[in-house]
Image (cartoon, rainbow, N blue to C red; front, side, top):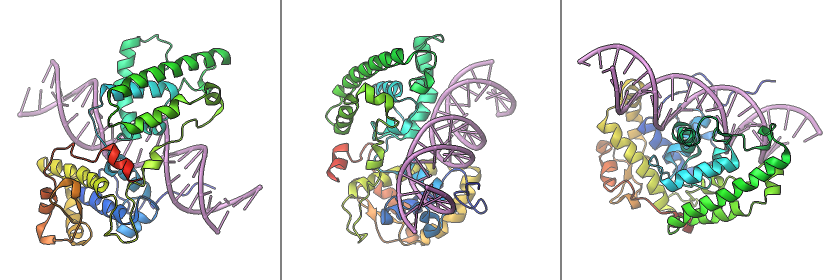
Length: 308
DNA sequence: AAACGAGTCAACCGCGAACGC
DNA sequence: AGCGTTCGCGGTTGACTCGTT
């Protein structure tokens, strides 16, 4: 029996998400939390499959995501974690809470792979291409040799991570905690465990913790950063008007979005953005008013920690 | 200004794991 | 235990941007 498709192929929209769709999705998650993705399209009326909604949230709308401009420390971490864990991007992303697995994967494939290739030369035996650090890919060397090399890799990774993290200890508490996890890995266990590192990102995902009353938010600042993401998106969207499908899609959906009383945002500062009453006649004006700060005016990791 | 190629990244697809009945 | 459903992950694709000619 074949696996049923995750959604009906008919009537399901594909391609880039419009700001309106983003707002609808965020509105839903703000109300129900990031769970039961299956219900999202039917509840919200979004013409997207549940998978697409989850991905959009996880990779783009989720609060606390930083995009682009990978720091040297992050690069180091990614390189060494990749050496440690292979192409297990979700596990790697769990050590970089502000980054998504997709972002790390892209950055690896577009930047770091080349960088390492340049550094080590083409005939280097290192596993810079990913995957070869796993026992299943080490057929050319004996198990003993592989374990020896892994021990060295782990040691090197520890040192590099220590070095990288020591620079930015103040706001990287989570990294420190995660470092403890990674340094506690027993190399012997590592060999036999199929999943030595729990994807910590899952523990961060239910960031918006709502009480049953949707007006009583305990995670205002974290949600604000999600609004922040959308605000930035909308701003760039306005600056560079969408072409092709994006524009036509938004044209067709704007009215319904504005008529949805739950999706307007009002606030005097980005850190206090909450969902408010809809003012259809106001359009996105209030949204932009809400967003008037620098892009890095978002909650800190410490603030996130306080939520748990 | 136009054409082309390379680089980037958001989104899709398919698979396996986890979960619930 | 077996089956169907849902979720999460990693690989891949393709649209878009940017630089060069």
